[in-house]
Length: 369
Image (spheres, rainbow, N blue to C red):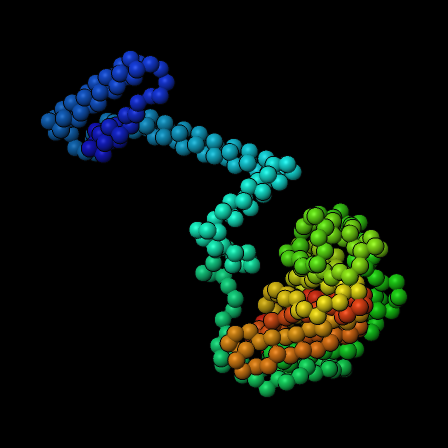
């Protein structure tokens, strides 16, 4: 037996917690005798001239037995941990348990304020920073593209080459006014909030969908989209706004029925990987709402009403580039690449508004061939 094996045997002695003191003493004496005999056997093997390899082979059955016991202990501990986690998860699914757990958690956080001010974390989207993922890094050299942009161009009869070379590759936003004229939703007077809400409430795949993000002034008592949609179906509810982002693939595809690929984009441009819904009714606030977007090609389609928007340069471009503001009216598309711009908005005042925003992956170095 090697010295390492001998240490393993010594450290394996643990007094049992069951039985009387006499039984504990008896077990301790037995373990001491076993320990003494193993030491004697080891010394005997050394005197007989056995090599460490030969002693390891002789004691391999004991090694195997100890390894099996260790594996059993690990398996039991892992099984116990899994059962505990499952039990906690199951209890959290019970409404009563969830309410109590939430209340206790809030009380604990309030008590902790005297020791640690955690309130700034409430507005963070991620509690632990991932060094391999984060916002794209831009320098002051990247800001030269937006230094001379003082307004948002309003265009029609736009072709793809002009779009890429004069606008997207130069990070210049624009509004296209004639790309939605022949869309079915624009040729009917029957498109309204009900078309959006019915889409989510009637489709089984969408009935339980969870938005990636959602912002509204209504408090429905639930964070579920389904509960909110039922609330705004009530004609007694007024002066509200909402926007939510779909990242569930079923929701993204289903929403595409209300908008189409604009004529100025070729089929080689990939479809939107995320999209968002913006709706409001008789909302009267001019406070800007921030929208967190994935990086790429952003297009906002104004289906009904209007939207007041603001494109603010991202640091460090905010030192040299101006803030751009504008109104997006019914039938118009706001197109921009949010490489240097952040997007804020508020709904058109005292009207009913519906808009859909799409986010599409875009190659920064795309070139027209």
